[in-house]
Length: 257
Image 1: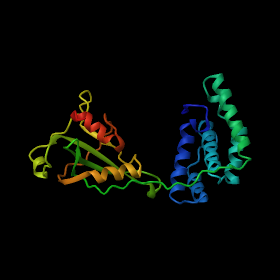
Image 2: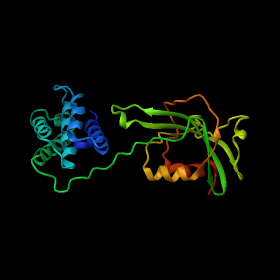
Image 3: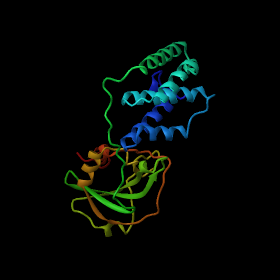
Image 4: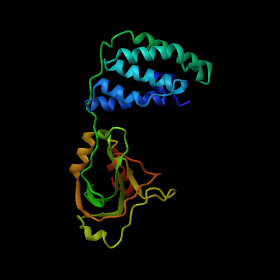
């Protein structure tokens, strides 16, 4: 089964429900609207492996935010009593631990959270960069360069949650003075990140960041120009970095300190 622990959110389905709820709630959707989305994609009543974590995860996240509805509470309690997934865990110890977690939740659902979580605005990354843009970033008095080789929107059920997904390659180039776009027109050579995978793609999924990290990087980069390439979508990436690791990784790649 898709569980890494016996906790309520230790199951992939429960965690997905929690994340989806938080994202929609952070966009300003009402609890009723969110529940309507969930009702359109309910697990089968006979699928205990999905049914139990779905409803228990749904009920717990609503309880945590202090917005637990009667219908979700009643369904979760019914599932705990009649469709428990505790017996699906592999060891007796885990089965007993899961049963305890479900019983704790059953009792909790009849209470009101004294310290409900606050609604936090969902950050949806939309890039202002364009496909083919070449950017320079100055590190240790040197200029390093990277290329935006692909921009895609991550598919999502809710259009408001579409997030831009960027594929970036780093040029095998370092200079003391800022270079112009003509320097890169004669031939494109990218920095090899990993000789085993022989994969020059450096950065993927730039939307996996916070607003502050995105803003800090955008203040530092310099647009050199645009050199369009064919959009590239890579299924396997040897270097999957986020903005917060960008400068440190560049330093390691080019031996800067």
